[in-house]
Image (tube, rainbow, N blue to C red):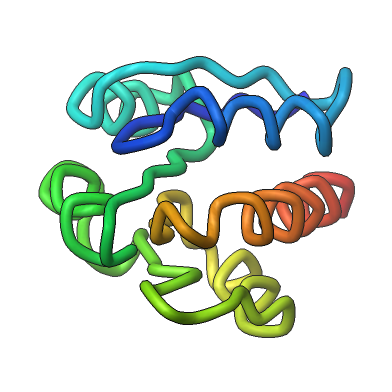
Length: 122
């Protein structure tokens, strides 16, 4: 089971999509950006998901500060769509915090969770 913490905007929608996609293979917890990033750093959670209006600013700013820029990735910017190949690449690179725009939550979270689950099975 992978453990995901959720921060930023539209947390309830992110959690709903994580739960729908991951079913019983994912535990998702809504938290603040700060607490979520601290849980990942402490090993109490595996991944952080956050959303903001742009997808790259507030969605990841706290996670970048706590986890480091090299552990974070924006996977869907405002006006964009998720690219499954790019998401898979970021997961394979070992990224553990992911940001997205609020408008892309419904299309991004399923792709991201599927990739995280695939990576955890390897």
